[in-house]
Length: 321
Length: 271
Image (cartoon, rainbow over all chains, first blue to last red; front, side, top):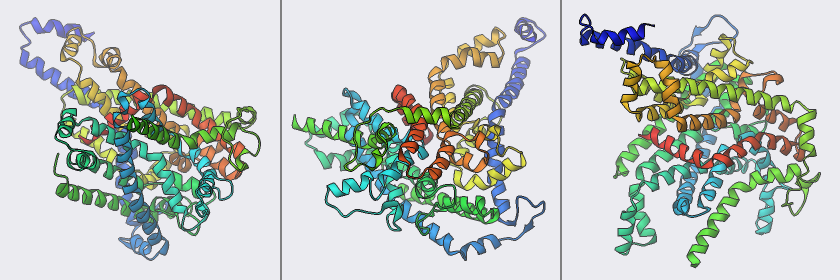
């Protein structure tokens, strides 16, 4: 009811425009805070709050069921570095990241180059969608079929190897091949996303540049190395960072492909126990919340360090931005 | 000519390679009993729907499906509301802390989810939200990408619309729901689709935050089922098909929109 009054007030002499501006400014601030409040509340309570709380748990001897806690400094971290399984998990994660990041990035780039002109041709969008489809599928549901694919006796993977006259593998049942099997699943599940990002990056390159290069006789590899590659440098960096962050936190497919609810995940013989899985098991299977928090802090720092390191490298080697 | 053919051929081949595992879920789920053990492998689905119908009508699966539908629907509603409100505030209103909040939202994106699970569990414990629908919905009731998306769309609205609304005495909330949101329909569609996919595929959070079977969503139920029905491939893939079908169906109908949204959204984050 007060709103129409204010409109009339504009014309009336006792309200000068400055005063009105002050009023709306004040209202605008209030309304602004009101509008961000719902999402701010969610972010504070479920994201920023826990992030701070993480530090607290990591430096205390702390138990969810006990009411008191004692400050123990770095004790949790000291316990951690004396656990062989902790080092094993870091090693597994490193192995996983070091293989998945370059393979995913290169494959995504290759697919993007192949599908580049696709959007303009009939049926081309379909291929793009098919490559992207695995990324939107639920991990547990598609893990089921991949467990079958990796079945040593009847699975598709060994059938294909037999067809090619290659030696057959034990896949998920083997200490050496369990983690690579998970890598294959991860690449299949996620490469579509990065392909789309590369496609978006490639689409920003003006056609004239490529046409001009073609006129000057640039072909194949030369075109890629001298023209496309420098131009997609920034997007490549972005993709590498994103793949690294995501692969360092792989959880669901390891959990479902290698074990399940009864603690079998991470096997055989801890060969697929990565940092995320170990954090989960330490906290929710063995209820060592403080140890798990110490591990989480380390994971946090590792991800931060990796991202910053890549940023430094990119500043040196990615010239064009 | 040959080059052209080669290009088409390789594209078709790539598409097929990526879709084959999903196709095989259908082959085994609707094939004859023991199709998973056939050598050489069976290629053609037989469309025997009986096991699937049995699973839906005689087990708890309909409950799990309903749980997932309910959780997804509630999350979508919350996300659209909170994103539209915050997106509008960030795009149109000048108030101290506006740009600070922009970076705060960006910061949420940077937090590594796996490192936060333990303290998040503790927070949920103290809020008495463990093992409840609320606990599966509220933490996902605000979306960083949703906020940025709405912000982008609202920024493109002409300032004059807002001026007219103000002179007509329309209050901000009514303006947002009556004018701004209807004009930002593509943003609503994108937010709904991406939230649906994320919410339906939710696995790790319910795994940690729930322990009673009656509220678990479909993905979590599926992982328990995987353990109990090891190597009963037809039953397992039938259940997997129930989890997969809505996603594949929605994707098939809206793939153009989803792919563009993902490309645009991720690119926008990069800026």
